Length: 261
Image (cartoon, rainbow, N blue to C red; front, side, top):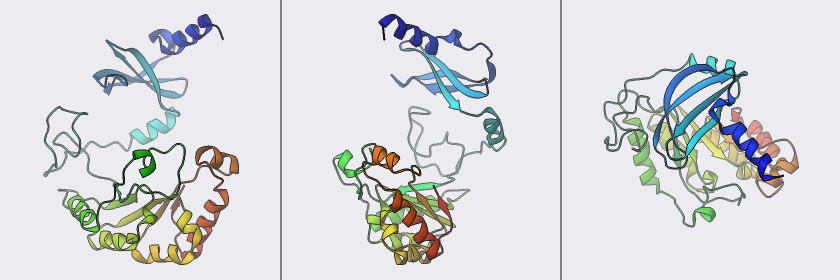
């Protein structure tokens, strides 16, 4: 493809004049993907899709797909609620949103689903993954005591303690004390506890799935990429289709009926 044609497509998809029937929804704030500077941004609808556009004085104009379905966007917007924040924020306001990390005084919502990475070790080496020890170059695995303090911290949120929890990773089923962690979470008052897993361990044993349920697991958040072998070979580097189906069947036999794919 010639340089002129490439330039034509670049201009087509990046220039502000591309949108012919823009239906402005609202103004907001975003950041430049290059320098991370906070920018004014506009969210708008065009041809049944929702986009966000912004312009950095240094790096130029950016436009991205925000929601692929305008009607779905409107449905979810009806559920939007900006709260009043926590009475006991955990971090101080220093640089301002979005640069400060954690639940700071500017944070308006409570913790809907708390996620704790209990390890970054994994029993797969997926080509696309950046969260495992092999990719990171180090092992992260908090002790049971450290995780307990994290759980207690989440339950201490005021006025709304966290009630839903996901154990993630890495691959959390690598930990031999996962059942104990689930029980501790339930003991501290988490009503919903889910495990984010690739399903390898679950596919090996119905009894393991049953022990997860007995410990208090509400939901299995199962890594599931598709219904063909090819998609797993491409994304995971190995054919895992039968493993995924076996994991689902073992959960069914164990009485774990809530599986998110």
